[in-house]
Amino acid sequence: YDEIMISVEPNNVWIFLHDTFYISFINNMLNFSHQKSASAFSYQKVWEKFRSQTEAERDQFLSGSFPVHFDWSISSESFKVEGGWTEHGKGETIWDRFSHEGHVFENQTTDLACDSYHKVDYDVYLLRGMMAPNYQFSISWARIFSTGRKESLLEKGVAYYDKMIDTLLQSGIEPTVTLHHWDLPQALQDSGGWENYYVVETFKEFSDFCFSHYGDRVKTWITFGSPWVVSNLGYGTGEHPPRVKDPIIAFYKVTHNIIKSHAEAWHIYNDNYRKLQGGKVGIALNSDWSEPRNPSIRTILCSLLRSVLVAELNQTIFEVQRTDSMIAEYNCFSSSCGRWNFLSWRRKYSLCWAFLTIGSI
Image (cartoon, rainbow, N blue to C red):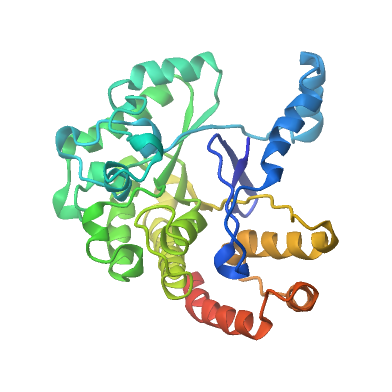
């Protein structure tokens, strides 16, 4: 697996393994060309190294590497599996628009996908066969509120997730629900999307509805899945919808508004639902592994990338300050390869902190 999603609360760590493969090199920060890294093939190398292990050896690795009460989960996201893209009034999402405009490989769409919208019983049957203790799935915002606002409530969309949750519980499988994994309603994007602070208020409405309606059965909530991908690839490099290429202003506005939305949702649950429902709320931050093409700057560059990818959101949410050593590494990188202007970096990240520190309130 190439992506590990980690969500943290006091005394709780949730980890979900994802099957999609992304390699994103932050060219908007380092001014390097964006290209697929040779280290992509390291996953195949790992498989080749361990494929000869016996079942007993693999079991020993699992029991010897993870705590006894470590919970494994099988994971999906709404846009990847549901299909039924206009069923029962579901609204268009930015990924629907993106794929229908031909921006996906071979003009593929997920209009049908795995057709999970019509296959709840079969999907849960497969999960039972895999002996999955937990299933993490995301709710399509536009399937519940077609325009993103509560006035556009779709009862049949609500009922679909009711059936999913109830069927999982009847099969002894704990549901973990992500409120938003990339598929913003297109109607909200038409009003500015994540660049517009207005979207924070609409996400509060959406999260409040989900907590109130499903929270009697769902005890583990994730506000956002891989939010850095949204802000960077959606608004920085423009590789994902809504195809905005603004790595300075838009990138940080979106990051701020997503973190603010997370904070608002957390407080809604904490203030109104936690005592009654007894659940927990976190955020799933993606973390990629990067290796430099030039081994001579290996330590500096790897530390640089991991600091940006992992710490940018993490440090803001958990209020951990950037350290002098990180700054020193950036400065050293600047002098060693001549491709990075430290003063520019400092101005950029001062702007970043001006936006982001507010989001953790």
